[in-house]
Image (cartoon, rainbow, N blue to C red; front, side, top):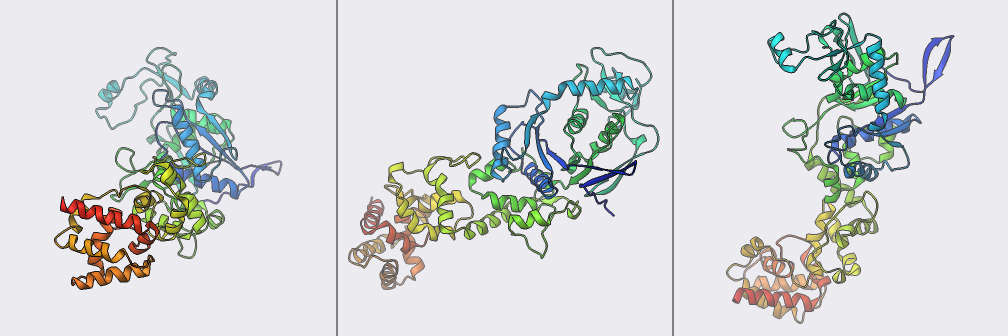
Length: 495
């Protein structure tokens, strides 16, 4: 049975007094690259937990890897959090791990002075030579040598030889580790700088973190960190390790192999509401066999105790389908507004999509024309960036021809059909239904069903074989521009 944490109070049984505890959670990314979708999932889970318990959400930037850190990555993290609804100014921070170097060194010194840590000058090769295997951990060789600080001497934590370390995890229950199986691990390098294990503990303690919710990959470190908390005379936080996020091959999502950057999904035109709804389903589900639910429902129903510890599959196809559903649920006005960055090439708000300029000249974009076709486009795009190839024919002087589509549509008989379409369209009433009836008659005269008859017309006018409904598109494009493109296609076929 998983432990249940009641964050509103903690009974210390000291003089029968109950000490009130304010829930404090943290999200602690490293600014070494684009913002990982798995990190975004953890941030959202921490954010919701803090809101549910009237607690505090702390953003801590773990920036001690100076060789890989870049300021733009930090801003990218903050902007990505903005996008998914964790707005700057509504949480504590960002704090920077590098600002706490003095506290890290003081903690290391305390552990050394109390006998819980010692200096070691063993190299990896020496350890392997003694143990006879690269897979066996450190053998405690320097425990009683009494070494003092010096070049090449790291500080190791002295783990207990007996007993067990029990990590009570809200997701995984009791995780028991035999202390004899925990090697004496390094907590500070020879130059005095702390490693992640110690810095993380000191930062969490300094910031009063009461619950550490993070990815499963950190679980092997947790017994070591719990030992550090206890050795420093501190009460460990509550732990919760959420499932690792994997790809379709059940491999952990990798920046080198998989599409994992939250910003890339944002810039492609995924809606923030769709993304955060989907991310919250990675290891958890709302009640009632539902998946697409209002954010208010997720905030109300999410419970760490209900998170499935099994690996969570990040299904990009499912996310795309989610996004399409969210797009179709927008009002027409909301959809038009959401498309503006791709239509104008401008960023509309901090943390919004960074997009390239559209292929047409700014002065050639007509908002009224777009508004006329927006209802047609809204039912057909799954991501907002797809709006550009769907409507570019309306704003370009000439359509951008897809050569593969041209080759398929402009076969024998295409010129004759286009010529007849030009003649018929010159005098036809210019509305979608009349245009459909007119072209249908042209096709029937040539033994063609409407689908076959409209293929060369679509490619000649829009440049593509798929897109918005053809006849509604022709109505909006207008008679003059439609006929000009049909005649241009005839000239190309003749040439």
